[in-house]
Image 1 (tube, helix red, strand yellow):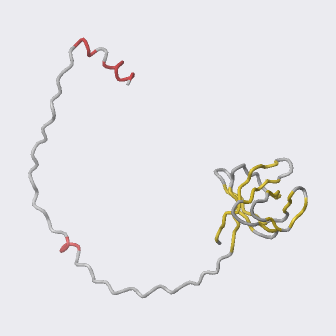
Image 2 (cartoon, one colour; image 1 turned 45 degrees about the vertical axis):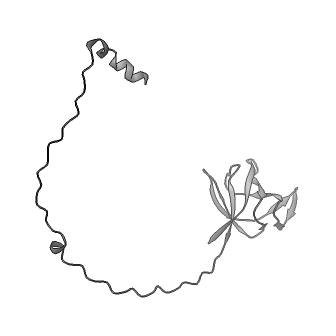
Image 3 (spheres, rainbow, N blue to C red; image 1 turned 30 degrees about the vertical axis):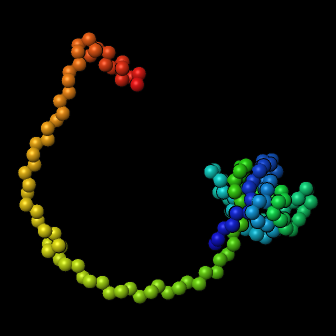
Length: 143
């Protein structure tokens, strides 16, 4: 199923379970399947009723604000998507080209002669004076 954004929830009435939707990108009709998604919301349901200004309607167009009964809590600024069936023709996969067989594992990996590593010289660091050494811990915490 393909989803197309149609609007955004701008209010939710908790006692009656109705969300107010501002249609910004598409139309909505009774019988459509919608998905309302947000950071904490994920609801998918069929549109059973739509109301505009307390009047029952069967279709709402772009720019209208509609009320819709929902089965779960949704939040303001959740996106409303219309779910649309897609009829996609499935193409057969092209035949695979024959591949060369890889050489045996032993023949592929050439052994390297062990090399002698040179010792890494550590950088020397000048010692701090004894007067500063006591304040070293407090200096680290203040940074």
